Length: 187
Image (cartoon, rainbow, N blue to C red; front, side):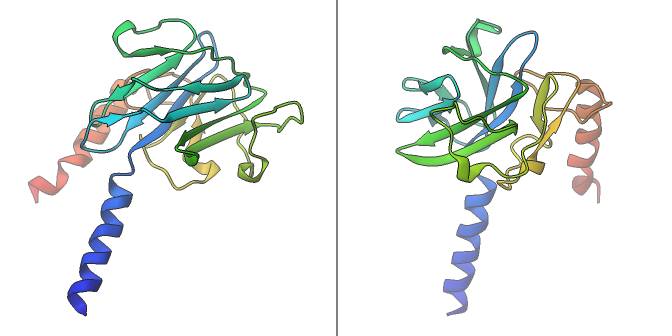
């Protein structure tokens, strides 16, 4: 019996540790884009995935993300080799992004004020949504508790790079994370 419980706990922890693809960052100005991050150690093929926003549903067929890597979804090409062009329109006054696979919500974020005009919204997901300035980021990258606290307003967009907390530039934040990431090796 103990062995079965141990296996179940390992499987449960593994499913949290390798959640798959998450919405990791959203930028509103001057360019509009959504960054997806693959938290798993496997290539993720996004066939049968789509992104729902106030501007519509956007298919992600024929898109894949390398392990522990990012892609950008944008209307205009920002970083050519890692961009997926979709008709993306977002407003920092209010909106949402919902990542869906086979009609199951995989990840979501909403911000600002819910509008009755949005035909694609999932009102039951709206709960204490943060207000947005120019950028919303998960800190740390990929951290997903299905809570509005997962996303923070940040000053510096970090397309295709690790997100940095408010007040720190991305390079400094990366150095701080590297110090702590390798601390267990020094003990």
